[in-house]
Length: 189
Length: 174
Image 1: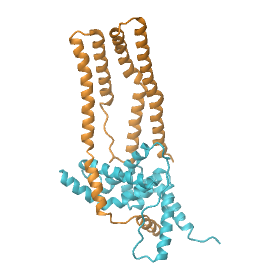
Image 2: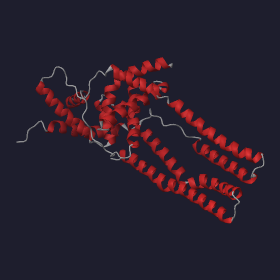
Image 3: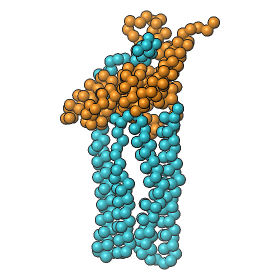
């Protein structure tokens, strides 16, 4: 270690006191240990799974009791497809490892963003389209009040689906791309 | 690891490394409130990762990896933030033995050093901060994942710049 190095290190390390405040340590320890991430994540996953199970049960039950069998069967199949597709896409996903080296962590962050971007870009195909068809069928069969009302219902549903698709592809994707660019820029010389 | 053990280890880590974590956080953001948030995020990152720490890497390497990676995540979450930030003022505590005059000079030099480090590109900044914190070349390699050659080249270049920056204003212009 050279003399100027020692000097710089000393200057640097004098920036804050060497002995942290005991109260500060206790405060941070308490806050960190109170944040039960695992539990939060588990709870969120459970809620999502329960919601999916509830929707599937609803369509399945309607099918069993013979209420609008075709549209309920289609809806059941569509929701099952979306759930299966999401599971398939995330089957190899592993959480970010904060203890990885900076290069590996950066690559993992970029990889995760790329995956999210790819998923969002294709939302109209794997999410909206499979749900659109049975929803339209439901609309046609549930509201048989004449061609005008049916056409209006279809138009509203179509506009809704298009809006969701546009929001995902035209707003969500550019947002993620901007985040990716920021992340890349951090490591550019 | 039981919760009590985990908490004891965690508090011990904080006692030993909190000043270094504070300095590191100050390299990523000049805003005091945001710096506190970042320190807290790093603490949470350490707490979360603690049960998985098996000692394959040294404790210091492991801690700095988490701190830097958490800081990167923290930065990318902030949309309005500039990609390169400069260092703000740290809560400064002069060395007890210093005279008033030398303390003032040190404070000025320290401020220049912090500003110069804060102005470095991110990769250089990470390497320099680890070096200034006293990590060996091998430890820096383990934290950043960069090759020893790349680290040495960057360090040589940056150390020279930093030393010049700190010295520059000490010599009055004729």
